[in-house]
Image (cartoon, rainbow, N blue to C red; front, side, top):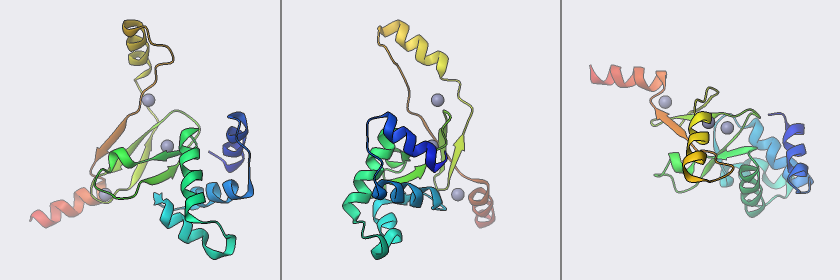
Length: 148
Ligand SMILES: [Zn+2]
Ligand SMILES: [Zn+2]
Ligand SMILES: [Zn+2]
């Protein structure tokens, strides 16, 4: 997702686009790997005057509106939730359980399941949250080397 689209989505969902929110979103977009609020606050640093609490709240908000994704559920052993910036189309995340690299998985066959669940339960607006975990090619290769 481009930054402009992310900011549009803020407005669509009834949230103001503040300079702070824009800076936090841009820093998240630029991050090479998933980051925690603390790490992102350190990156933004003294130059912006944005505190960790603001970063934390902004990340929570961005996750709420689907601009960012919080990896907490996939990483129960971590103290601090980490976030990634999301593309705008429906997707899921594949997380390496060794190095915690995150890859977006675009294919999703759950739409039918959503419908089926809605039909059987009478719920409306049924959606799903789904994370994939596995071992990335690099980690799998190094694990094979260690075993020999
Ligand atoms: Zn995502
Ligand atoms: Zn890995
Ligand atoms: Zn899906």
